[in-house]
Image 1 (cartoon, rainbow, N blue to C red):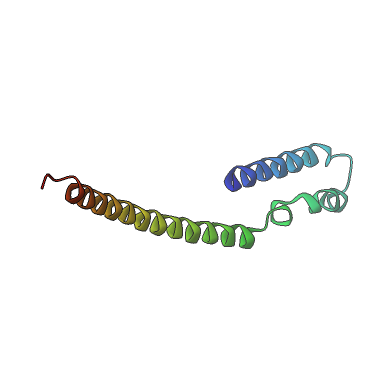
Image 2 (cartoon, rainbow, N blue to C red):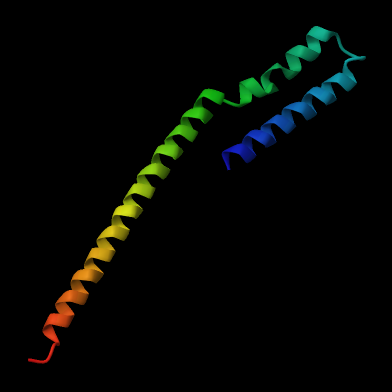
Length: 93
């Protein structure tokens, strides 16, 4: 979702720049730059924060993978124990 948002911001920034280039014939370069400055991608998108988010997502994914693996081991141990306990309870004497 973050990558989609970055792409949308990039496209919007490009559209604004293209539109500004079209009206450049009516305004000075400085006027156009002043108009589009707040809409440059580097002002709309925080790459440092985006990278931090991706790092946190990766850490969370690794934690979930480890937890899932441990849960699978526990479930198998419970099944093994249940099978052993059941067979000892229900063996004819």
